[in-house]
Image (cartoon, rainbow, N blue to C red; front, side, top):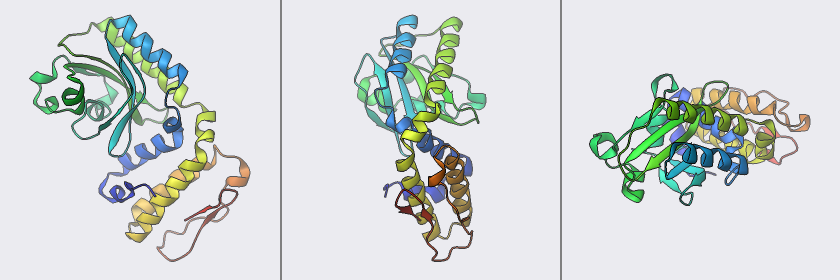
Length: 239
């Protein structure tokens, strides 16, 4: 079971749903994807930035599906640029001309580990309104960006999320997603967190629509926190 399962009960319903979209989209299996790599390359070369990346914000980490100009890596989520970017009102781009001049980013992981000064990002927003991560541009020196480049970044971010949301990605990663969701449900049952159980069960059933029929649950999950075990036919998975 994912060691981060215990974080569920301390998070808002919207954040739990956002995290399940990360899980069920299949993007966690798209590390090094050629189409995403092409988009990141276009973003950097078209704007003259030395670094770009498609970042995915998971539960406590953010990781880079692809990167241009440096090797993909993982960063801690707290105080990160990308965590701030996915929380921007109306999913507006996040623009940081010089991180050293902004107290909230002076100790961002990318500043500490890569000496990043300038950061610009457009969120990767799903068709149902959840930001999975960002398409971002970075530089080790302070700089601004013009409106045309920012518009291009947003356009390319929309292209990136379109690639991520293709159904085959979700189907290819579905067995892991089902197992992880069941693990999170089991933990929430143990914590007697009825609201989270109900929410995660809804997300699990949403995933059913992307799976082949024989994987579908046949018995509704009771919202009472009893000792019943619910099997997911065809996967060997239960909760």
